[in-house]
Structure formats: structure tokens, C-alpha cells
Image (tube, rainbow, N blue to C red; front, side):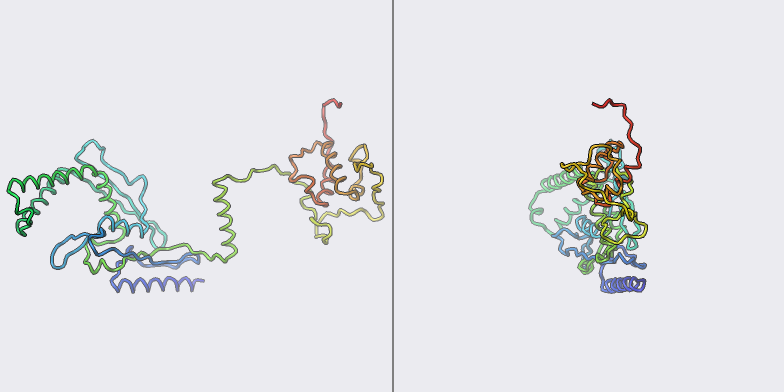
Length: 369
């Protein structure tokens, strides 16, 4: 089995090396893989990002003859989902006290499972200070205005100086209002994107050729042999457990240990070693069924007066009648039976009779009517 496991690891390792040499973007860059268990298998998941900025996966970070592109929040979410990033439910939270409308801070704690199954976490913080944000927006629009004039952008050139200033102020006010409206979400997104880049080993910018290559995630998955009887047994147990966890388990019925539980189920079969001998003694005269009453009930009197040999010879219905009478005499509660008397097999009825005979009679202070 170990040879097979080693072959699996070597095969995946070789494929990862080929992908790396072809220029593919390997996420979770550590590809040192140990031996896999017989029930686990390493698979490679590939995801592609669109190289068109209009599709929203990338945006231009650096202009020029050889522009550089950064991955947008939409693209980072795709990659993080593929890699199985999980966020800590209590440690990922807003850090500021919410008293300052111009400031918000958020901390994100996220993790992934490496190819060996070990979890690995990273944390990052992101804050928005609107004094800085406003300055940045104003600077951006100053640069845009210069660019519009330099490139002789028609709509901007046709404006007067006052109209240009009014237009820029309107754009600045619009962008600030938009950021204020979504400031908490922007801080959360900024912190989570920092964690995604750190966990996945992503670069800050890519060329379009690099973006066009697949992003590859090595993942360990559970793939047991479903033809294995032991696996089938475990699956059935898990299935039953999942059902009972929703609808509740079966009630626990009271049980009592009786000698008939070890009796032979079928007297026609050969007697097993250690089984109870329930045959009449040799030379013993069988019980004459003609002594029974015409209605099929046992004769009036003490039911315990019937001998074992006599009990063995009567039919099933009469045996059940005698057992019911003995249960009443001995004070044996019917609820302690694991099954109704009508469900007892012949050997069970005989052993139960012997068990009842040995019990002391029930004592009662009730006055008989």
C-alpha cells in the first residue's frame, strides 16, 4: 500500500512542477507533499480569471506600453473560494468603537488547509480615515483635470473655468458620499483581500499574459473505496445517525435477561455445544392431552402443578395460557417481556416456563373477590 501512496504523491508533484514551468499561477505555493493515506487523494483545481477589465476580475494598476494589472475584489473572491478560505467567526470583526463617523477599522482572520491537512491562518487590518480619504480623492481629480486638459478631452475643454471647478467638486462630493455610505463594508473588504493575497501568495500586479494562465489549487479530498465492506458499514452507521439526529432515536424498551435467550431457536436443528437439554427424560410417559378441558384451556388448579414434561407435550396455545397464569401467580410483569408470548418460539416458551417455576409466588394483601 505504501508504494501506491508514494506513486500518488510523485505523480501529483510532477504535474505541479510541469504546471509551474508552463507559467501557471500555483496558489498555496508549498507543494511538498508527504505520503497520502489509502482513503485520501490529492487533486488539482484550476480556475481562470478574465483578461478583460470589463468583466470585473482585473483592473489596470500601472499604465504604459506594458501595463500591469491587479486582481479586483471579485477576482480575489473567486480564488479564495476555490482555495477554501475560511474566516474566523469571532476574531474577524470591526475594531473601532463607532463613535467617530470619520474613522472605521476592521480586522480579518482567515485560514486554509494545506495539502497535509494542517490549518494555516493569517490576519490583517484595514482602516478608513476620511481626512486622508478626502485628500486622496481631491488629488486624484486634480490629476484627472490635468489629464483632460492635456489630452484635450472634448467635454472638459468646452467648459469654462468655473464649470470645471464645479464639475470636479461635484465628483469629489459624490465619491466621498459613496465611501461614507459603505465605509464599514469597504474596511471589511480591504482587510479580507489582504488576507487572501497573503494566504494564496498572490502578487500585487500581473501582466495580461500571466493573468491568462490558470490559477491552480492543490487540494486533499477524502475518497474511500466504497466497495470495501467496512466502508459500507461505516456509511450505513453514519446514515442512520444522521436520520436519528433529526428525528430522534428509538425509545429504550425495558429488557430482562432470561434463560430462553440462549435456547436453541429451532429444535429441529442439531443441538449446539452448551445448549440446554429440553427433551423429556427417557422412559417418562408423555402428558395425555385428553386430560385438558373441552374448551382447550388447562385444567382448573395450580398452573405450577403441571410438570415440565407435561408442558412440553401440549400445543402452543395451551402453553401460552399456562405461561400467562404463571406470570400472574409469580407476579412477573408483562412489560418486562422482550416480546409478546405469541412471538416466543417453542424453545423459548419451555425455558420461560422453567424460569417462572423457579420464581417465588407473589405475595399480595388484596382480598380476593
